[in-house]
Length: 505
Image (cartoon, rainbow, N blue to C red; front, side, top):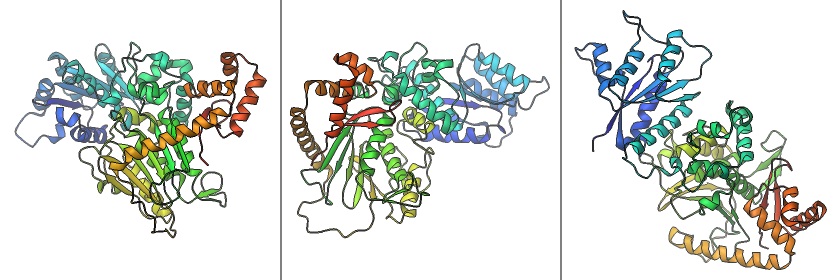
C-alpha cells in the first residue's frame, strides 16, 4: 500500500525547529512511519522550477495538509498573499484532509488572524503551547485520519476510545489534582471551573466532543482503572538476598491511576532501602537515600507509561540486596536499542497520548531523555551505571551501593521463564496472609477495606453513610486497621487517598 503524503505548511522561519522535529517524528514512529511520508518544502532538491508552482503542486497532491499557524503571516506576493495561505487554499480547493494547529501567542499579524479565522470555519484544529503538545496532537489527529479511512480498525491502545466507559467513569478530583500539578510544572491554563471536565480531557486528546473517553483517560483519571484493565498493576517485592527466594519478606500489589501506582511503588522502594539524615540540602527534606529518589521515580514511571497495555502481565518492581529491577511487558520501539538508551536519543514514546499528561504533571521531566537522566543521576551518586535488558520483556536494573554479597546462595538468578511461576507463588502467599489478617478483624473493618479497595479516595463521611455507623466508629475502626498494618493514608486528609497494605513478617 502506498503511503499517505503529508504536506507540512507554515511560515518556515517561525516554525523551523517544529517542522523538522515533526517530520523526523512521523518518519520514525512505529505506526505513522509505516503509513505516512511527510513533505517539507526545504527538502526539495534545487531544480529549475518556480517556487510557488512547486509548493502549490505538493499541497494539492498531498493526502493530508498540516498547517502550523502562529504569530507571523510571512512573505507576501504581489497580491499580498503569503505562501502559507496559498497552500491552505490549494489544499481546500482539492478537498484534502486538513489539520490546523494554532500556536498560543500574545500577538498575531492581522492577516495571520484572518487566516486562522478562515481555517476555523471547517477544519480540524487544535491549539498548542510547546512542541511536545504539538507532537501529541498531530499523532492523535493522524490516528483519527487512519480510522476515518478505515486503514486501522483497531487504534493504538493509548489513543483508542473505550466503548465500555463514559465521562462518569472519570474522577474529577483526580483531574483537579493533575491540573494543580500541571499548572505548577508547565503553566497549564485550563481549569475545571471555567472550562469543564470535557474541555480539559479534549485538550489532552483523552476524549471526543461527544464525551467518549480513551483508554489513556481511564488510566490517568479513572475512578477504578483496574475495572477496565486488570493487569494494569504494579507488583512490588523485596528479597533479602540476590535471588528470588520464598517467602518474600514484603510483597504488595498496587493499583489505581498511573500517578497513584507510581507514587505507591516509589514509596515501597524508598521505605525498604538504606537512608540517613543529610544536611537538609539533599532531596526529601534532608533524607539521603542510597539510591536517588528521582532515579527510582524515573525508572518506575517509565515502566508504567511505556509498557504494552495489551499484555496480560503487570509491571514488576523487585528489590534485591544488590540491585533494584523494574520489569515491564513490551519491547523498545523500532529504532531504539538498549545501547542507544544510554546515549542521547530522540523521543519515541510507546504510548504518546498517555505519556504527555505525565510530562505536564512533572512525573516525566523531559520527553525522550529519561534514561539519560537516570544514568546520570546514578553515576553522580557514585553508583554503577544502570543496565537495560530487552528480552521477552524490558528490564531496568539500578545497582545499589557497594556491599559484600554472599555468593554461596544456592538458588540461581531468576529468569523470564521462571517469572510467571514466581509471581503466582507470591500471590498465593499474599492471599494466605490476607485471609489470616481478615480473620482477626471485624465485619465493619472488612467492609471499610472493601469500600476503600473500590474507591481509594472515599471519605470517612462517605464510609459512615455506606456502612451505616457513626463517624466516631469509623475513625476507631480505621485506627485499628492502621495499627494492624492493613491500612495507610497517602497524602493529606483532604486530597490524599487510602492504601490497603499487607506486609509479611
